Each structure stands twice: as structure tokens, then as C-alpha cells.
Length: 103
Image 1 (cartoon, rainbow, N blue to C red):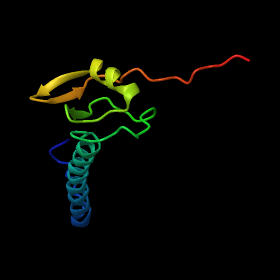
Image 2: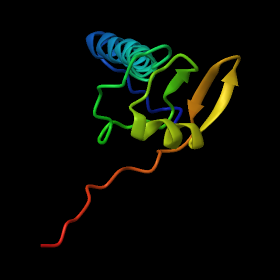
Image 3: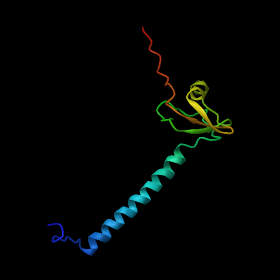
Image 4: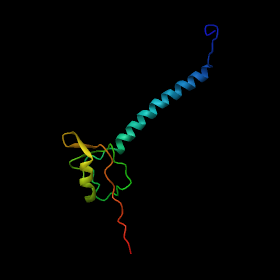
């Protein structure tokens, strides 16, 4: 039965499918590039940055990266070396939670 059955897509459908596959490949490359850009904190000065809601897992940073004081130790504990003077955050550092005051 499969030998006698022949199904052909119209040429414009085939072209559309090929274009979708090409765009999907392009989107993958764009995603990889954007991920690398937003994950590169090497030599950055973040001392005045509120990192409380910033996802830090897989971020790359260097010995010259300046972290907010409350984050230095946490980031260091959550990181491992990736190369000379470059580190990667392997897991989300613990977050600060606002102090609860009882009145």
C-alpha cells in the first residue's frame, strides 16, 4: 500500500517549510548570541546594580568584576573557575530577603 501511495507537497509549501527551518536555525543562533551577551559580566562594575531578581546561574565573571558588597561572598560560593581569572556561576546564589520587622 505504501508503494502505491504517493504524497507530494506543493512546491510553495516545500519552500515555506525550508524557510521555516532556516529561520529556526537563525533563531537558535540569535538565542545563543543573546544568552552569551546577557551572561557576560566579565570586568563589569555592578556595585550599584540591584541583583535581587537577576538570574545569575551560568553568568561568567572575572576577578575584575565588581559586585555589590552583599553579593561578593554569595557569588563566590556559587561559582567555579572556568579559566585564568574567569569564573562561572554554577547555581543561583542565595537571595537576600528583606528583613521582617515586628512592631
